Image (tube, rainbow, N blue to C red; front, side, top):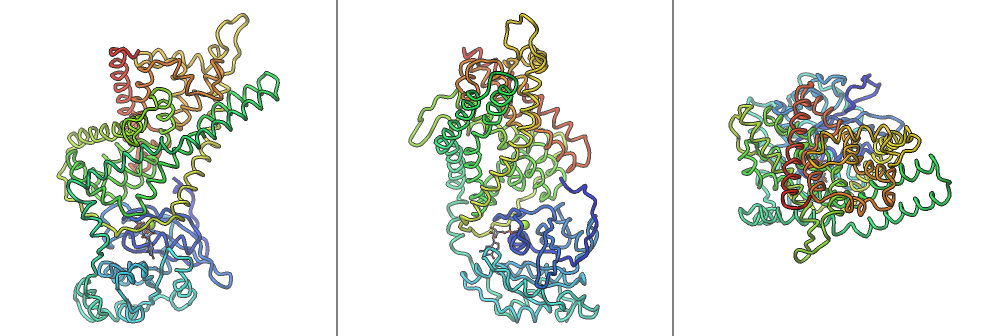
Length: 627
Ligand SMILES: Nc1nc2c(ncn2[C@@H]2O[C@H](COP(=O)(O)OP(=O)(O)OP(=O)(O)O)[C@@H](O)[C@H]2O)c(=O)[nH]1
Ligand SMILES: [Mg+2]
């Protein structure tokens, strides 16, 4: 996104955090630099380099890079390549680091130390942050840090990246000028260079000398996995969990949504009471309150969805779900590797597409990118929620089960099924290649920290409100203007909007969209919905407010419930399952695939699918009497 900026190297030292995936690099980075990068309990969270500043005593600052995790210095996937390029001084726009901080997972020294040996051989000054010592201690693993430092020939600081001052020892180390000094050539390999033995032999010898060569099993995680990864209970649990999540989106949000609705309604009424009828009042009430207020109301539902996603991410469940779904994904020619990028796309396709950088196989990566927009991103949630609230009765279908939640779940499933079908087709025509077995690390389960989850929710709320105040507000205002001008001619009978630019455009579009049951109001709303999907909702609010049909500022839901047929609503839902992704997604696809070809193919096929799905849905619904 922001990689096109011109890089000039600010003066000052540069330290890079390097280590295996999920070792806690980003948690440590956040601690050192006061940043808030995403931390989660699975491998492959960080896929780009991120920069921060560490303040040392005496007004000194150090630039710190957080890098994607890597298992070795022979990169296999695009994210690992980023790290290796930085270490070799080949990264575009970045100098070679002055110091490498090897972040080592104290519970998994065997694997981590091999990477340390590799980094050391590159001849860069290097220190080890022995992280997760709290977890190691709780499993009875005690590591003598000084002895380890002696074995490796580099300073070692013990850290607990999730504790308040868990980075103190590392900070102290970075204060010392001697750790920044380049080792002289002869010392690079000492004292572990006493033989030609391969690194894993060296590591084994070190662990033996430190009395750490027994593997500490992690019993609680293993016990949990006996259920979670069980061939029958595992998938069942996953299905129940996902269903519970969508149910909660409706079941828990109502009180907060009602409060927000009441507040926006009140604001609309106050403005109507204060201002005389005219352009300003129309702008405020029909444009801002009806449009933007109509979107804000969905904040609680978005937060509930993210609450679940954050807890799943932090607990360590996600890679297990990937494992469970590996067979299913194998059926369409993808591996479980694609699962986490696809799951991230439920938040937004953009981070999902970025997360495909962890996929080593180029073709798998491309197919995953192409289907990522079919996962229901959170911007679609307002559209779904609006239509479900308007057309699906609030009814219990079982203990704790709402019909509305069931329908929402079904829409998410429809997106997933559609995407799997497309993946299957793409793999067939793109020459599938064999599917390799999934190799993925299962981290130990962590109790999600309330602080992290709340912080994540707060960030989500900020992102959403920024969208509301930015792109959604801008487009709503623009739409209000297009829908208000030019005014109606003398003696016009219909509502003024029908004579406006937007009205005429909508009617022209409706010619194409009538076969799938869309009226001109929907047709108008779809256009700005391309920039940000939620705008489709705010646009409907504005369009209906300006049409003077009822009180759209306060209640869009009952209004569309009255004026649309069920078939139209279902057709619009089907449209949005596939709806061509927003423009920023297309821009991301262009960047990640290096050209316009794939984003254009994507836009084309999703438009076609959306139209076909809506057409079939509409015709079937009409045939069944829902027209
Ligand atoms: N108990 C404990 N948990 C930690 C510690 N450091 C990190 N974690 C947790 O470990 C998980 C992984 O942390 P991240 O910082 O995302 O790991 P990363 O090395 O950046 O991982 P990638 O970006 O995937 O390479 C998260 O759930 C953290 O909360 C620690 O010292 N102790
Ligand atoms: Mg990270």
